[in-house]
Image: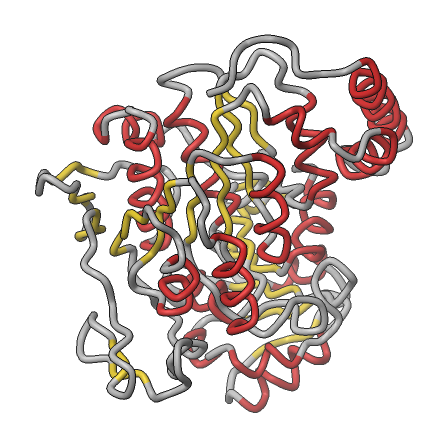
Length: 412
């Protein structure tokens, strides 16, 4: 970690002050947290501000297609055992949002930062992280983000020669390809439920062989590395072979995998697995995800799923039929305007659930459900869907902006 001298020049201090003022004005106007617009203003005034703010921090960067917000939160909780933490906990994960978050952490020792996949290499250059966690790569926002192989290549080039300890999921071939350029990698067997983006070898393009949990390319020899950490049922196995129980309030296997990666990251900073995992239990919800709220005298569990891999994981944790399910899909800028990904989701997993469809692109989703042979009803809004749903807790699954719409409607 750098020394404790103030790294901020007068210009940087002015940029921080101006950014905070703009963010406060944005909040007062009801336009959200203001973190992004505040960060943009601050970076206009001092383009080097992100690097300056990171100088006195031990930084962890977390990037992935799915799970990065939750994993960032779990790591932040674990590292608080060792000192104050600043984090972009609400998911503003591009440079402007990251700058805003770090500007509010003058007393912090650690910076735990979620980073959008496209921006990882640039943010790593600016923040000189001590550790980078890479969880998974799958198709998402096809009109904005690069194809997954290109993203993996960008990560690989950006991380080549990095001094950071890279904690990477050895079960995702794209992540392994990206991390393999780094001189110091800790491999975690965190699993991979969604495999449809990793059937061809990222090294040579050959067909991947997948016997059991293993994988390898029969043409060039690229293969799954041996992990030093692993998720095994309800336990994390550390490099010494000790099994540490995972107790989370967050549901599903995916969050156990996030906890395993988070424990490996915490160990890089000297926080033992037992301490790290105990602290992760404190996390009940992440930016509204997994919250159970009361609305119209009904219990609704709010679940975020932004892409095929995320929907697959979410289907695995909802209550069994006949639990009612509300699905909401938008296609605004933050979601990606291309909804063709709906055809990659296996909606037959919802068979037996009463399904209600809302959102800007409810008709796109309705066509997909019709083809999947599901019984569903299209509703005008959340209120109507809740009124029509049979008794019991309702599972509400939404993509990004649809999720934010739902949170505002239920007052969460």
